[in-house]
Image 1 (cartoon, rainbow, N blue to C red):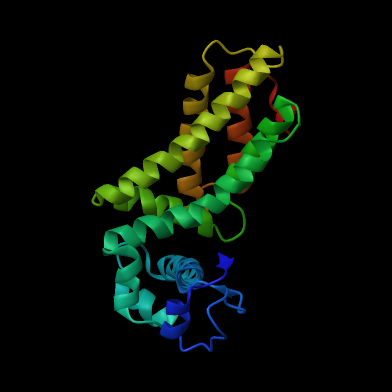
Image 2: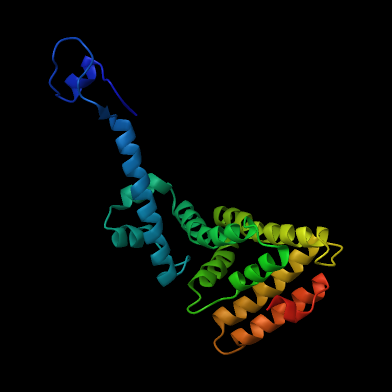
Length: 232
């Protein structure tokens, strides 16, 4: 916060004073400047951690790897995250929040439910080098052994299901979808997409992206009383 500083603060910073009136210098407090610098450094560390995790995997990433890649000391990494587990959990959340931001843009738009549904299905499909899906799969796997990561993974995973269920409910209310259990349909559709996405991302040439898309549309159409062609 900018403001007039008392004489004692000026003496601490070795700034000149002119009488006992208000300080002529307008300055940002050291606390605010330090906090802003810390926020910038934290963001840079998270981005670096995501790059390291994408190369080494969650299980093989060490705080020393992140510190070296970021050009900082391990002490600074531990200052921000306290433990390796917290570093991994926050880096995972930082990475997948990019996916969730795109999902939020779809669900908050003024598009009709059918258009939103088509866009969500496209977002879910692994494209190109599936770095995002690799992070999700790695996060699920490591969550079996890391409770802190499991909490973050579960929370973020549920957001997909909840947003999909909301879109389905909106479509039912508007008479576009025929579905007696939107929440259950969201889980079943997501389960099929998750399973196929793992095969597509992990096993080369087991299934094609075209098969992934066709099968997901088929399952979704059956759940919501649609024709698969309506989801193209």
